[in-house]
Image (cartoon, rainbow, N blue to C red; front, top):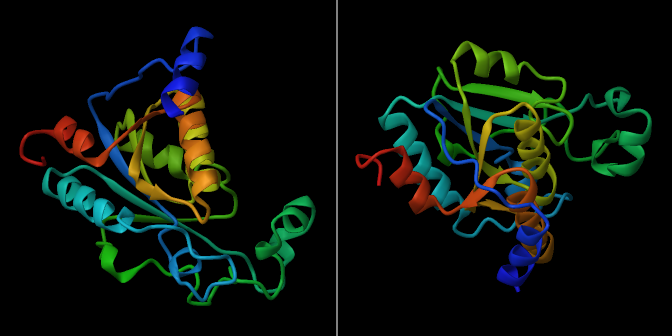
Length: 215
């Protein structure tokens, strides 16, 4: 089915390849308790195998001095920052829900072992670019390529990929290093991301692109 959809979009002028630039950064999106813990009211993202591949990519990035940037999401406990349509559409952003700042919900999974020099961005929308200093960090490091991993495919991965594309970065989404709470949402959004915003490729291909020492 994927190939038939891809072939259809290719006939309409979608699905070109952007490839890698010369200066990549690895983005690890929202791999925190709120999305990974089965007890979370947000619902556990399906990350079977995803964490393993993210750790492989982290090892490679750290080994060849590629910048690593993490994100998480948090709101004030009183719900002030989520007033308006955002809090009405996304109920988990409202008061008393699962993303209160200061709770353990937005703490990164300890397996990621974030290092002091690796930036952690707290965001309040799907895109890691919206209302954050991510662009400044990327410009300061002369980054031209985003390697995007994490969750959720249909939300924050898609939002960040679209923003990266709109900002004219070579945007790569690692298909087996992203996850979603529902398999249909995951698959449909990967197809759409691949056709519109980014190259969706597997971990092994990304590692080869980063250099023989990382494969």
